[in-house]
Length: 337
Image (cartoon, rainbow, N blue to C red; front, side, top):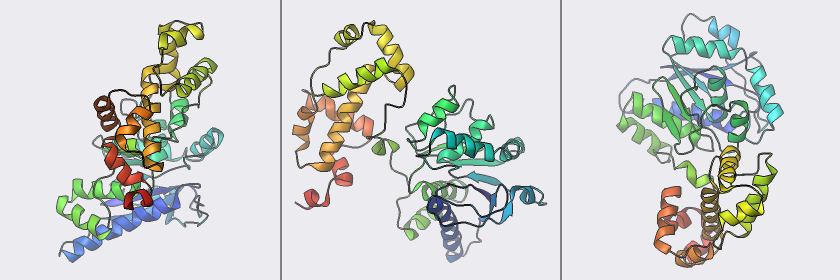
C-alpha cells in the first residue's frame, strides 16, 4: 500500500513522526511473523522545502507536490495530518488553506480515481474545501471546531467518534495519539485484527482510541458574538448548582423561551438545558480530578438531587462511570490513598 503524507508548516511534528513510526512498527510486526511488509510511504510538501512544525524541528519532505504528481505510480492513500495547530487564530487558518490550495485538485482527482483519502485533525479542512464532506461529518480536535463552523457553516462535525470510516474517506480526530490510533485502524481494516493487536502491543498502546468526550470537559463555549447568549451562559454557570428557571431567564433577558432556545442552538449548538447539563458534568469532572470528595457527594455538589439520574447522564456523556473517570484523571495522591 503506497501512502503519500502531506506536510505543512505549523503541523504537529510529533504526529508526523508517530505516523511514520507506527507504519514502520506494522511492517516490522509483519516481517517477524514471516509476512511481507505492506506499507510504503513518501512525504510531500507544497514546494518541496523543509516544513517547520510547531515544535521547531524541521522536516525535509521527499518530494514537492509538483514532482510527486509527475511520478508514474499514483499513491493508494493520501494522508492529510494537521495543516495548522489547533490553537491557531482564524486569520492564520485562512493563510494555511490558501497555501495548501494546490493540493485541492489533487484531492479531487484522487477521489475520482477511487483512492483512499484520510484526514487527521485539521486535515479535514482540506477535504471540506475540496467539497468531499458535504454529506459527511468531519472530525477534528475540539479547539478547531469553531474555525470549521465559521469557514464551513453548512457542514457537520462528528463530536462522538475518534475515527469515522466513510469508505474511501476516513476522518480521525486530533490529539497526542491520533496518528498511532489511525494507523492501528488501517492495519485492522486492511491487514487484520491479529496484526493490529500485535503492533499495538509492540508500541505499548491500546488498540482502540478513548472516547473524544473525555477530553471536551474544558471546551471553550464563548466563541460567538451573541451578547444575550453570553449573558445567559454566565447566569446558568453562576447558578448551576441550583435549579435554573429557564422561563425566568428568558423574562430577565426580555425574550421568549423559544427565542432563547433558538439563539442557543445557533451560537452553541445546544439548548439552555443541555448547556446546564454540560456545565454540571464539567464541574463534576473537575471535582473528580482535583478533590477526594466521594462521587456520591459530588452529584449533590453540582446541583443534582437524584444521584442515579446524574450517574446515568455522566456515563452517557463521558462513556464511563464517575469512578472510572477518576481513575484516569484523578491525582496520583488521591488514587494511592
